[in-house]
Length: 283
Image (tube, rainbow, N blue to C red):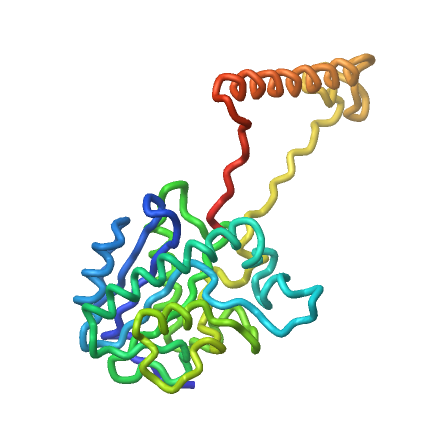
C-alpha cells in the first residue's frame, strides 16, 4: 500500500450529464468549490492542479468489461450491485461521459501541457501526476433533484477520505476491460506513458460503498386492527373489508386509471405526438 499524503492533493469531480445538468466540485487545501459551469471548472481545476498531484473523477462508467461469454456481454460489472453500466441510466450516462470526459481532458491538456495523466492508482501520487478515476454515486447517495454539484462534492469527499487505502475503496473490479477513459486520454494527448490505456481499468469510488446499508429502509405501515382496509374508517374484525367495500375500492381504482388514460389521450392529441417517458441519467 502506498503511503499517501492527503494535504496538497487536489481532488476534482464532475457529475456527468447534459450541459444544463452538469455539476462539479473541487477540494483543495481544506477548501471546497462547487458549480455547474464546465468551463469554470476547467479553469479552476487547471489553476489549482498546476505543479501538484491531482485526481479527477467523472460520474460515469469509464470502462466496460470485454472477453465475456456472448450471453453475458452486457451484464453488470462486478460491484455494480443492480446499477449496470449497460441499462437505463447507466447506458445513458456512459454515452454522455464520452463527450464530457473528452471535452474536459482536451481543455486541460491545453492548460496543463507538461502534466502527465494516469489510470493506475497503485503508485499514485507520483510527482504532479493527474489520476483519472470513476465516481459511482447511486441510490440513496444522490443529492436532491437539480443538485448535481452536491453529487460531485459527495464523490470528491469520498475519494479524499479514501486516500489512505485506495485499493480497499475500489468498488468495481474487472480484469479484462475496454477503457473509455483511456480512449479519451489518447484522443486528447494525455497518452504520454507506455501504459496500455485502452485495456487498463481505473479506480472506482462509490460513496457509501456498503450498498445494502446505503439503501433507505422501507417503512412498513400496517393496517390498524379492526379497521376496514379500504380506508373508510369503518370498524370490522381482523382488518378486513366491510361488506361491499372491496368492490367499491376496485371501481375507484379503475375509474382513476381510466381518467389518466383519457388525460394522456387529450394531451397527445393537443401536442400532435405521443408522450414517452424521459430516461433518467443518474445511476
